[in-house]
Length: 278
Ligand code: NAP
Image (cartoon, rainbow, N blue to C red; front, top):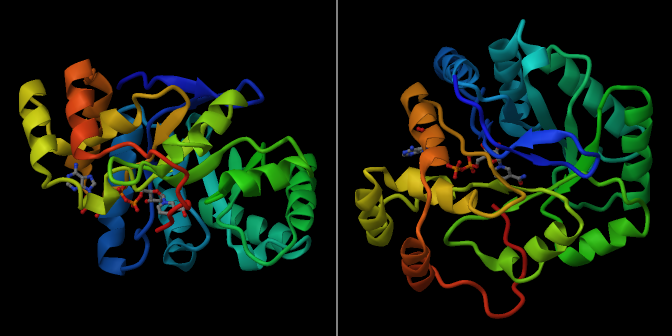
C-alpha cells in the first residue's frame, strides 16, 4: 500500500496526483470481472482517485467502478461527468442521481461537465450548485474547457474545482496558456489519455530514458505528466499488473537531461494552440 502524493483543490481538499481512468470499461460482459479486479488491485495498492463518466459504456463503467469500491467508498475520491446533452438545469440532476445509483454511493467528490455543448453555462452551473446544496456532489468542475471557455465560466462562478483535459508528451499545447492559467488560480488540471491511449509506448526516446531508470516507457510518460505541480494523471488499464507498473511512475525522478531529451523529441508549444480532444 503506497501513499500517493496529493495536490490541493481550490477549496483546500487534497486530491491524489495519480488516479485510474475507466473509459472502455463496462462495455463487454466477458471483461467485467477483470476490470473490477483491476480497480480493486488499485485500491489495495493505495489508489483512491477514480475517474469515470455516464458516457463510458453507457453507464457500464460506473457500474464496474461501483462494484469495485463496494464497502470501500469512504476510502475513495470519485469523479464522474455529465454529458453536455444532460447538462441542463433539470436533466443534470437526474443524470447525477443515475450516476450515484450506478456507483452505489450517495455523493460524488467531483462532478464535471464532460465537454461544452449547447446548454448555456449558467444553467449547468445552477444545476451543479443545486447538487452541491443537496449534498449529492461535493464540488464541480469542467472538462475540455479552453482558456476562453474558463474565462466565460469565471464570469458566472468562481467555484470550478478542476479542468480535465488531454495532456501527454505528444499533446503539449496546454503548456502555453491553459496550464499557467490553472496554476495561477491554484486549480488542478486532470491529464487524460496520459499515455496517448498506449500509442506513445513504442517511442525510441522514451525507451532510452526508461532504460536509464530501469523503468518502462509507460512509467516515464506518466512521470513526465506528473512532474508539474497541480497536474494529475489518470491512466486507464484493464490489467492488474499494469496498475502496479503505472504506479511505479511515482518513484521516478526525471533529470534535467531526461527533460531536455524529451523536449527535443516532443517540442513544447511556441504559440497558442487549439485545445485538442479525444
Ligand atoms: P490512456 O490512459 O492514455 O491509455 C489507456 C490505454 O493504454 C489502454 O488501451 C491500456 O490498455 C493501455 N495501457 C495502460 N497502461 C499501460 C501500460 N503500462 N503498458 C501498456 N499499455 C498500457 O488513455 P485513456 O483511457 O483515453 O485516458 C485515461 C482516462 O482519462 C480514461 O480512462 C478516462 O477516465 C479519462 N478520459 C477523459 C476524457 C475527457 O474528455 N474528459 C477523454 C478521454 C479519457 P489495457 O487496458 O489493455 O492495459
